Image (cartoon, rainbow, N blue to C red; front, side, top):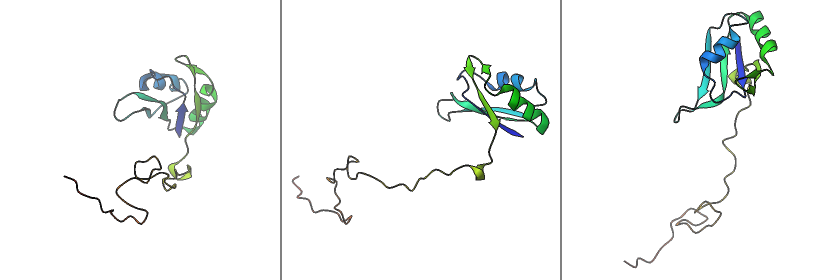
Length: 119
């Protein structure tokens, strides 16, 4: 079973998290998610346990407990296809200079304006 762990302390690493979950059974993988550029923790992780009964007891035993000074949230991870999708097709506001000012080199019909060349 794949388990989602949230509200982690940013100093918590995968080995600390693994040792907390190994009290409940075998852990096949443990991954604290980090920022791609800075390498710093994003404050959540995924733990995979092959035995579902052990995983459920880990969820029940660790949810709302303290780890490294933070109260963590532990629950079963949702498959990607069940999660709500982000809306990347939302309307764009503004234009030109991104402040809503239409003072760019394009008019409303997206045709280039004629400018006087003074140089």
